[in-house]
Image 1 (cartoon, one colour):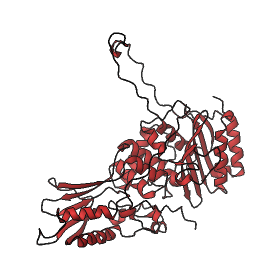
Image 2 (cartoon, one colour):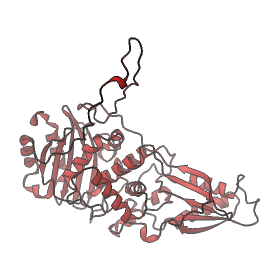
Image 3 (cartoon, one colour):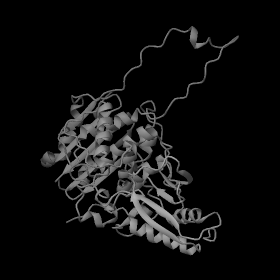
Image 4 (cartoon, helix red, strand yellow):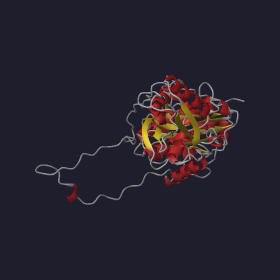
Length: 441
C-alpha cells in the first residue's frame, strides 16, 4: 500500500519564526486580492466638497457567483483531449474572476479530495479568526494554589516553552525552596478517543502525517513518526524540566473540557506564530496537524462533529455549490471527505474577493518555488505563476489553486480518483488553462 506523502517538518522545535509570506505580483484582473486604500475626505477652499453633500452611493454589488454553464468551448475541448479515455476518473473545473465557468468535466461529481480539503479548513479559519490570530498555551494558578496548563494545539510548542512554564510554576527563582511540597500542575488534555478523527486509517496513525490531534502537542506530536501517547511524553519532558531546575512537581491529567474556576489567575501565555504563518504550514507544506487544529479553533469547539457542522454552516453562508460536499476532517486524511471541482473553484473565487484574500493566496505552494510544488514545473511557463494546494492519497491525486495569466486569474481544480499518470495530466491541464487565447474576454 502506498502511503500518503509524509510531511516531517525540520522547522518544528526551532525558533518560532513560522513560514514567511510570499510576495505576490499584481493580478491582471484589477488586483482582486489587493485592498484599495481610499484617502479620508477633506473640505475647504480649493478642496473636494465633503461626502455628505454628494448623492448617496448606489447599492453594494454582490460578489460574483460562479455560473453553471460552460462558456469557453475551445478550452472545454482542450481539457477533454487532455483527459482522454480516463475522463471518467477526473473532475476538472476552470473559472475566471468574473464568475464565468470556462470549462468543466464532471465538475459536480463528489470525489475524495485528499489534502485539497485543507483549502476548506484554512478558508474557514482565516475568515472566522483573522490573519493575526495566534494559538495560545496558558499557565493558570488555581484558587487552591495548584496550576493548570491549557493549550490550543500550537504546532510549534517545544522544550523551551515547557522550561519556561516549569520555572514559573516553581516560582520566580526557579527553586522549590519557597514550598515544603511539590508543585501541583494539571495538564488539560482531550481524551484518547478524540485524538484521531475516526475515519483515519489505523496504519496512518503511526506516521508523522497521522499524529494525534491534542491541545498540548510538543512538536506537533511527531518526532520521526507519530508520538502515540502525547500526554505521557509531555509529563516526561515537564518532569525533566522541573528536575533540572531543582524543584519537585506532581503532574496530573485533567479533561480539557473541564471549565477553569472563575477566579483562576492567568500567569503566562506562550503564543504561536500568527495565523498567516499557520496557514502557510497547513497549505504550502500540507501539515495535517495544523489544518485539524485550525478547523477546531475556528469552530470554537474541539468536538470534531461540532467542528464539522460549523464548517458546513459557514460554507452554506458563502453561497457555494455544496451538492455532494461532505466534511469529515480538516486535513483530508479521512477518506469520507467529498468535494467537487466546481465547489473548489467557487471557494477559490470567493476567497479571491475576501478581505483577507491575499493571506489565503500567499499560504499556498508556488509552482517551481515553494512548498509541495517547489520541484514541479521548474523552468516552465507555470513557474511562479500557479499558487495551489496539492493532495495525495493512495489512488487519489488533486490540485486546486489560482493560475495568474495575462488575462487575470484563472481558478482551477482537478481531482483524480483512480486515474493513471495523474501528474502528467495535471501539467497538461494547467498549460491548457494558461492559453488565454482559447477564451476571449
